[in-house]
Image (cartoon, rainbow, N blue to C red; front, side):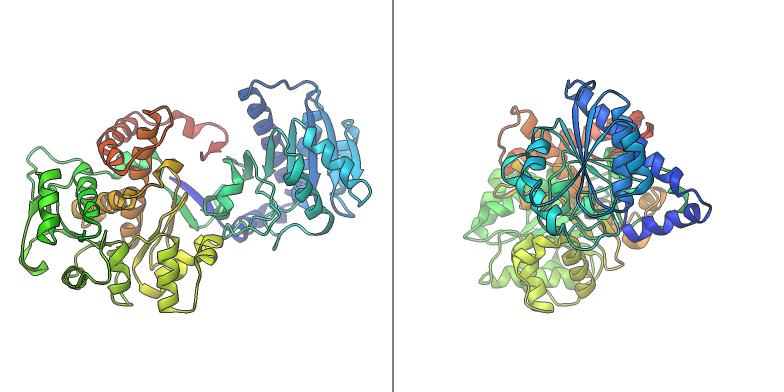
Length: 527
């Protein structure tokens, strides 16, 4: 499991070592890790080391010092290094080491900016070491002008962020532009929460964690990410004497005359994710389509109370005019059973819910929810601060909230957070969310009451509902990625995603049994 922390948590963990006079040691460890990450990236890309051109953009603080010391090490490997000082000062010792190694130094000024932007644009590597975890707000003044010039016309070959891209908030992932997107972010001591939440993740590229010796001082993580090994440990495996009822019965209230396919896709997702039985409640015409598409599904009649299940899925493909379905959705929530509530059900549910209710909005639906419960919130505001938005929604509703997106975030009302980014952009297709709801519903029915499974994995029982939602998001993402790769990286449909779920499940279960040696190598790669 990957743990991420706020910048404040990381800086607090550094304090015992700084008090012991080891600040210089921490900086050297960070610099060595950054230099090693750059060398490895160049080798992976088949690029030369000797003679490679490196430009390091530096601020006046410790982040700039990390970058300068790393560039000095690269100069020692025969690379041609240039430092662009974006402010009036620089880390004294690091700058001296850089100059001793033969690096050239330029101070950024209005008259030198065009020339330095062009030089950075021609470089093999640009190291972004302007702002660190303690910075608030984005690049300003000359540094902002340089980033703007690079974005406009001089995109370098390889951009490596030192700890995090300048302008990305380490705590929230909010980005204050202009931000130079990194191909690789080498971050020190621990992953920063802002690198695993949108929009910060848009700028981070691949993230590599370099241990520097603060790890034992870190507190409980601010955010976590399940990796394939975790999935294999948490996904249920039926015992020898299992039967369809013991494997979990999921009730589904979904679909309408306008969107009958949503019910079919939700059922397909649930079946593919291992539910022992799926019961469908809905309009007769939709039920007929479900029977034709999924003969395994039991199409029932009557009320929620008339149907015995372990969990419910409500809302997919429903609208405000589907009164009978919406009543069923409210009745399902009132049952106290685990619920995944999607799409059309979200506006119809009570304001205050419970942790076993998993809401699955996209950004627009979350904006509407926040507007209804608190203050006017637009989709743009949610997308600009996804972590803050999902945190607020979970706090207001007391439910578990899953915000769908390129990075899927899950927040529990206990303020535990998960971030999953396992999929492919091709998952952004009609019906994909219905399949995801079915997957999460099936997992709620199978393992919702199995607190011990999560405790054994180091997950607090109070937050196991959030872990189940993250588990479903990860499985859905891996299935989509696998399905796209089977088509040479091409587009996929929601039905294809559902078909790929059992294979993705099998792969992570198998990989979990053999372990992941690369997880124990120096420098953890997150993606």
